Length: 136
Image 1 (spheres, rainbow, N blue to C red):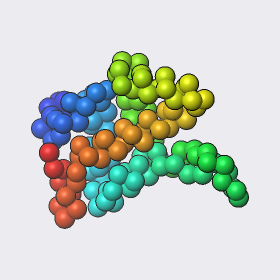
Image 2 (cartoon, helix red, strand yellow; image 1 turned 90 degrees about the horizontal axis):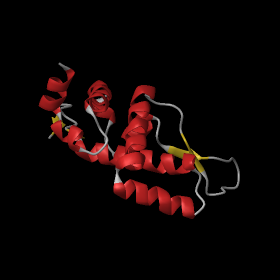
Image 3 (cartoon, helix red, strand yellow; image 1 turned 90 degrees about the vertical axis):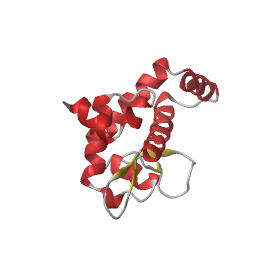
């Protein structure tokens, strides 16, 4: 039943690599709850708890960590998508290999990939601000 609802509302989400019906349903639940808050991909990232914040106080060392606020189930759904892509998606595997060679930790690589996925999701589900409907 959930698959039918997701496919009727936003089939383009399921077409993206690593996003299954359950992940797409979680995305749609969060977007449906707060359509007026999603005015940019940064707003969706903050709502999902994926927005970067500086890791240190005072002098910036250029390091960031993920803001742990936000919708935890959506964050977990995006994390699952990243893990699937790290395992089976060739461009993501190449990205992980390159960033590992540059000296990045796996945790930082996952943080960057989560932000990339949420950016992609935002463009897949453009919300009409006036009505709150998803443009397909």
